[in-house]
Length: 130
Image 1 (cartoon, rainbow, N blue to C red):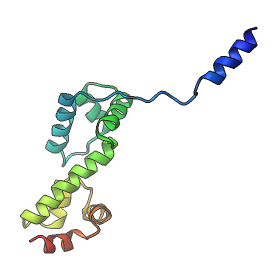
Image 2 (image 1 turned 180 degrees about the horizontal axis):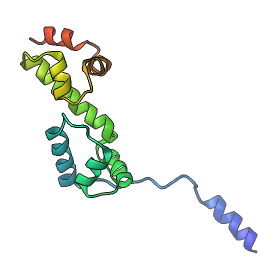
Image 3 (image 1 turned 180 degrees about the vertical axis):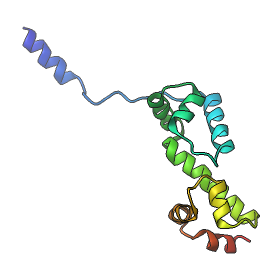
Image 4 (image 1 turned 60 degrees about the horizontal axis):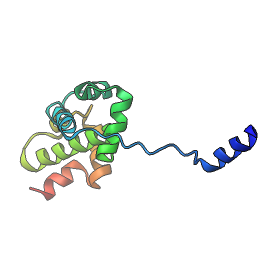
């Protein structure tokens, strides 16, 4: 009898993991977003972001992705590139200074990431939007 009931329960169950609907409350997401924008120049670690949300790293990562649709790293990179676009269009700062101000390790890293996202180099972007 036991093997029969076990087999029926196995067949009845879908072994796919249950969807994780854990999300960050709006005020926590806002706090984390503001922290990211204020600290773009600094290396933003997952631990620091999780600490800002008062969560463990694993739980924060899961909730952040469920809330925004992107990983914390992708979100940080998006914010850095948005700020870089703004600076390119509105300032006369050198590309190396913009790279450092937006948290990239150097101008080369900045140029590669910018071109991946915008399809243009930063200098071409600047010339088009000025």
